[in-house]
Length: 165
Image 1 (cartoon, rainbow, N blue to C red):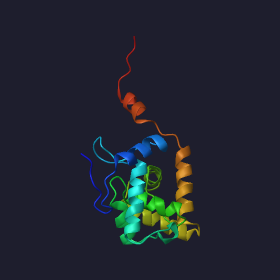
Image 2: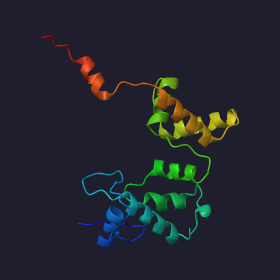
Image 3: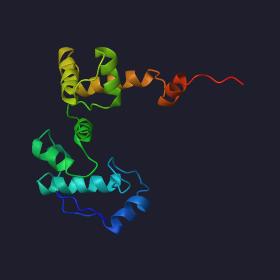
């Protein structure tokens, strides 16, 4: 069963799915529950339609606006953090609280805070040091990327008693 997006009123057609899979050679899916997750290309097309429905027709009109955020988040698989990332990609100062930001926060503060508190801390820190919030986000991300962390698999092995032949 194909679901219809409530904001756009659109259900992905067979032609849209084919275009995404074959023409764009993109079969990546958005996050979501179940095995019938929407394709990324279709999700972006639905988000574009949701923007058009509220009068947004060019990227320079996109702002950190509740109505626009609601339109973006109305598409299955697109949520608050991808909204913040879109703003960053459009040159708006923002922070995407992702895994790398969370790891940095945990190393610095010793625990994870709420997403909103984390975003505010990064933005406030950027303001204090007179750097852009997006620039600080990228710097944190780059720093964390270089840090070595044991994988979940190796952590699991370290808990298992060694077996000698």
